[in-house]
Image (cartoon, rainbow, N blue to C red):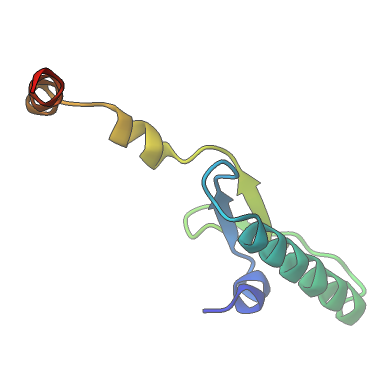
Length: 90
């Protein structure tokens, strides 16, 4: 699925600027701006809706924050901690 089609659907994408390529962020940002210009020129009345269950809105955008997946990966269980200690000792 292309960025323009995501923007046309009103997708809210979570983007982690610390791990994501700058070209991807700027491409989606320009797709959102292009869609917004087209949408505003076609519709005289601006209607904003939010469907929080699907993550789509009338105005697409990027949500720039650290990914919660990174935090989950950073938490190690006992077996992972023991393996890490053993590898350092070797």
